[in-house]
Length: 487
Image 1 (cartoon, rainbow, N blue to C red):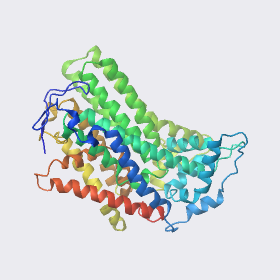
Image 2: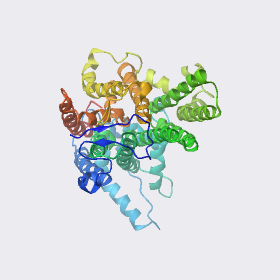
Image 3: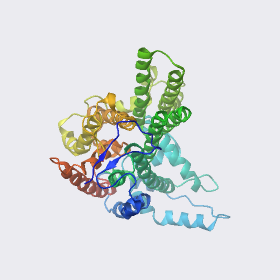
Image 4: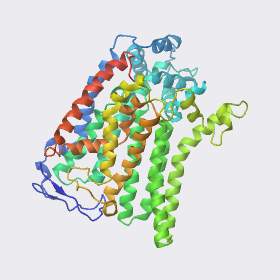
């Protein structure tokens, strides 16, 4: 395996990286690259289609009712609404016919929390416990489902479910492509090793252990797309700053905050990405204390605070909407708190989340189930602290000597580490297998292990991880489609 020397001088993603490869220089003939490296977008798209062609029929054709019959009761209570096809286009009629004829298969994707998602998307939030679900996700399903409304404004639940499934598939593919771009910007793209590293990292996201949840009407795929895009824009801001492009940096900080805020409305853990801005704000405060104020420092800090505030709004706005509904005309226990949050109340009161609340003997199998992904997330976060990620990483790089790209990876690792620690101590731990899909650093660690075959357990880690992820996703597809735990 070829090795690459990473320059100590910070590099902009648009500049020429002077990487040296033992078998390929930075000016090597790209025509000698394998086809899959010359056409990474096509390769990832074909891999995505092949993987979904396996998972989709497994889920759609699972026969049993399994653990719960809620989906079937939902379908019976909300039969397909008759469409008024007068004056509609032929393709629209055909699409409605497809949804109608395939509704039995579609319902197999509406399991567990997806039952709440499609119901809330249909009629809005009715019960307090439903505020555990992302306001942005149910709103997205409602918006897409409205395209299938008849002249009375009625929308069938099957159309909402179909919209959610389609959105999840499209978002999953796009998030893999964005992850490829993010990896490319931070780890380089000159040598075959770097190109393969980018491709492998994105491919790992396609066969993520989130599996069925990235195909079902769950928010994980859309969250991954928004979070990866936010991370890409945020990293681009750091690289732009390194290149002296301050205006671009400021705009990118603001755009990243908006994307993270939108991701937060999809899944509450999106708020963790706000720690990126907190890191920069702390760094700015230290610089202020050491060197005094400057116009650029004040300007940079202003946009960092503005970007971080955007992230906060992704959580505050849905909470405010809930407050106006429950705390103006009526009173609930959470309304009188100093920080009234329906989300926090629901998580504790209805779902029993909280510090060490999930640590019971009966939940031990779920801790074992989550252990591989949780360990990968925590370990990869620690490795990022010393710059030991990538196909040609330098061992134990002090934080003070990290280049811009390595520093960006470190920031991303902090957010991932916080999520892993929170899940381990305070959440239903098995969900880490699906919410981890929206965080890139552990993918980079697994991809890095492919270049460590000379080290103990190096190559074996990568092979075992790929096999384990694929097997888990296939087994999970059967369990999910049959409405059997775990979920």
